Length: 115
Length: 109
Image (tube, rainbow over all chains, first blue to last red; front, side, top):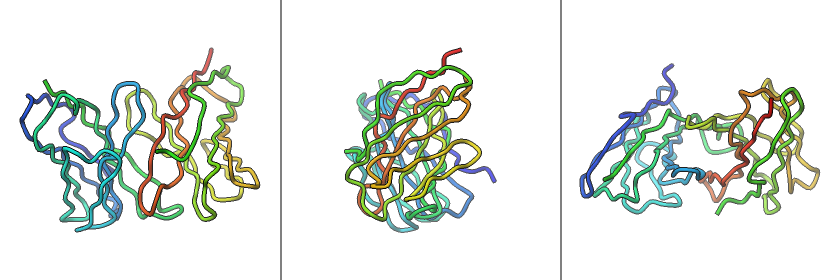
């Protein structure tokens, strides 16, 4: 299994541009989530999904959209990039949302810079 | 906000046991405690989780107090490769898992 994969690994955007960060997992996990991590800070939850067709907001959802049309994929869309969105973005998945099923596997991250 | 409290940083001598504390005084009866770590700028890595009983795996041991209001992650023989930020997490709400700022563990040679 490849686990959780994220593309691209690095990205530079200009203010106002839009883009999609890709996340895929091949473990048939129901739960997927997106976090951002600013320099020297912890992870903050952006959006999450408990299954295909179901998404919900996390701590910092503004400026981001998500969709979950398949179990495998959970893309994160930046609608109009702003310098405040410069961060490292991590995608994670887990088999479920209770007990042992909530063990999350993380991708390697996407490093985004907005100029 | 995260429902856990951890010291911002700790030091531990190489070869000694590293004991990382976590307070989760508002934890509900059926909520698990999870521990992850993040080495440098990599994605976080799952370590261990528990509900009531103490747990041990190949990476660490987890000691949960009887009232479940605090726990301690134990790395029995710390090495330089254990230098990382360690996160103690409980679930917030129905399906959210929120990371706090964690404890930055420095292993001293």
